[in-house]
Image (tube, rainbow, N blue to C red):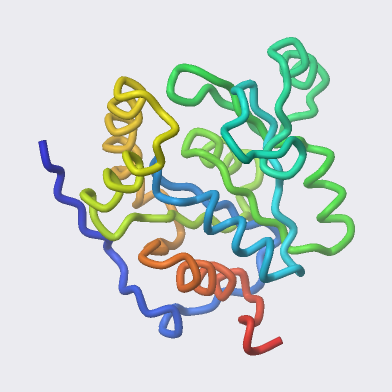
Length: 208
């Protein structure tokens, strides 16, 4: 079944009003929208941004590096982090694996005066809003539903059953767009990253 989805924002990054530089910016959105790709681009091209690395109990995908893409931990280690209050937020994603944001790493970056970007799932974003209401929340949206399906299937990292589960989850996640302060459309990675950095109150690549 085809789902109609139209992002509710214009896509021209230069017309987006720039808010004062926030302490923390949270980037979330539906599955397969490209949150990791946009965040990685920001990390690689805007060194003044500190990108949080999440801990997860899922197995690494091909090409993922421990400590760079995620901290891959056992269920026992994740339990220890919960018990010792070392997670700023955590959630079970797709009813399969747990993800969380190590608290001490974020606190160290803030203490150093860095601009912090948290790339997390919708559940985690809701938890962060309660813990850090002063943070800025950005929803990363696909150009269309069909494009998001194409990206998920083309990724080739999930079984058909897992793909279907993710798409069902994505339908619910898209409905949460109104909970966020801003929406950025991921039509191209470079443009979406530039708009996100502008919302963080930082100069673009050409302005540095």
